[in-house]
Image (cartoon, rainbow, N blue to C red; front, side, top):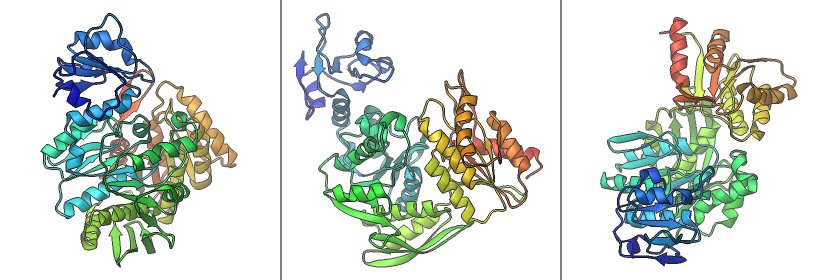
Length: 488
């Protein structure tokens, strides 16, 4: 494809050099550059791509995209733009010939529930006879392929290439988690979304967004990205959802338990086997059952129901698709055993998610709730004390341990969490920095009828320490310890 075609519709300040030069790929890392590639010199948090232009050209780059003027020493075609991230996303969509315009795309944003909703929708779409693809926190997957996810929402060139590959493999609907980071960094610009979903908003990533207003502003961008006719699906019960509804210029399907919600859950039954509710929607009602547990998962079910209605899937098929999904990896995932213990692995890593997890467990009427959790290093520090406070209020015993400490001192992280526990007056906790040992002690401490919740890492299969990354998956560790305890 010629450079001028790659730049179609892209706001360009200055184009120097041959606009007809052939472009055979797009890269944002100089290490990924191949001959005839367009190199996007982006400013990153740690490094500046402008410093790697010479390396990219030496690697065969045919042209450079930057927000700065072309240096005198460089003769290669140079595209100067005001916003290189937006330009990169639009160029990537052009280069892949806009695959999102040839399939249905559902974007899901919010603090909690995104991953679970992708799994529910995937199940509904399969039941309806479609070929879904999923881009999310756990994996990127579709017909006959699955890749471990490196990040929730990939960079624009990778994302557009993935959409094109999905299209070539017969994907009819792409269900995508859209992170606040990806919206701030404009990775999803150039994607035509048919349905945009807002789940809820609570304190997370405030080390990046600084304030809840900024966090909300980032999430809101999903709903104003393109002019393709589409629908919004928004949580009516969430205060930020209510605010979003008031600002949206498009058709909106609301969901929740409040009377105003268009997709509404009533006559709710929650137990260890899952959930059941009467779902009322415009034009009818039906009883929906799911093996997913907890009120928070009913919200996820209602959101998926609203999306499926927007896609004109019959309610009976929606109901069957919801029932067909048995479990979501690392999301209140039950670990079977014959010791009479109720053990769950969950990804909860914020105070609001932790509270939701503990409330869900309490609804199941456990003898005691034993909680194992920590907090990630080099991430939002403000939530640590709040997480400790939630644990002190809602758990019967807590083992404070390491999550992914990264470059921070694990004991310092645990000290910040401990402040929150102590604030509640609770002394029912232990500090065990080694995560394996903490899980081992929790399981040994548990008695028949207790619920053991191992939270924070969910589906992750690694632990990031100061100087290395080690294999570590909570579910596998629990099973290994249970085997040593004599469980089959």
